[in-house]
Image (cartoon, rainbow, N blue to C red; front, side, top):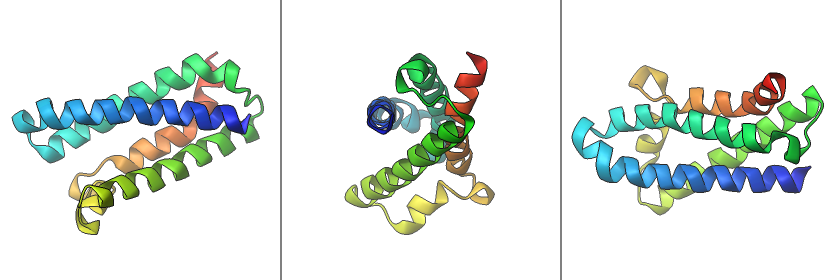
Length: 126
């Protein structure tokens, strides 16, 4: 199950990376960086849900405990990925953390919470 959960997460990050490139090139210049990232979290949640929905049975997390463990695994991997990518692109810690601060307009915590719950939600809905 963990190998499959890892492969699903990689597919999610591939989709999110493509989405991020499109967002930064086409959307951010029109509506601004923060608004584009806020919209991006909502679109990202849809992408995550669709991928999780399509792979839920294949992944094999059948118990509630396994589903929450997979969700936590995905959220932790995503934090590591996001922080590493942000630093590799030369972003400051302040800029990176702003996306996680709802008081400053950052929605990433909501996105991570959704990612954590997604394996459970998709199995419930199936």
